[in-house]
Length: 92
Length: 187
Image (tube, rainbow over all chains, first blue to last red):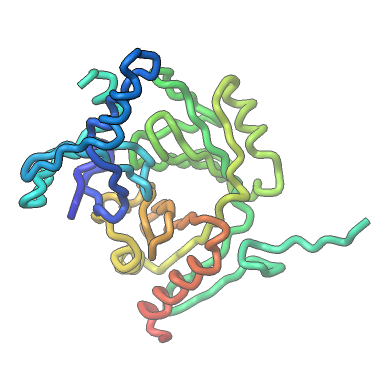
């Protein structure tokens, strides 16, 4: 499986480690009154879609960047990858 | 005072050299390394007159110094024969305000020279899972080699530097030695 790194081009997936759903980037605000419930959802509730999924991958044996990879969990087709910092700054 | 004997990353008193069928594999104990990072959006500095490269690039400058890209806004600066000096301090003097970290003792460098480009290319095909363009002359990249994280610096057609973690020096040397022996026809 090859991951199209936005800076380095196609790289073997073995260079990466997988973290999970890209929604993990949206960490709840711990200062809000409903923080406990929000964190319970954040930590324990996950969608497990059969199909297109946005997920976080770490380029461990590479430039150590976090990527948001869009992958089809049924076909394993990789539809795109972008730097997680770019995604976070865009607020998506 | 205690009489201490310096040893190389492989534990020898002199850097190890191994030759096999046109390949020369050499431990480079004298390479100084320091990482340099700048804040996002700050223009890349030019320490020692080096033009810091973009992603996947290697820049070679005067006096055995070179620089390669390691991450966005971050580079490794290398200097031949400077491992015994405080190279990080020299680099910081070149880039006031830069984020500089000494790296020399965290890594070990192995130099592989061959008779021609084809020999290096057939070796790299076996060592790393990268497209040929990523290891073309003047390119430098980090990747996995037998599950070890290494930097692959293609200095010239017939010369590549592999920089790996110092604690894994013996395993990396074994991997490289085995590969050049097989290709060099001595095994």
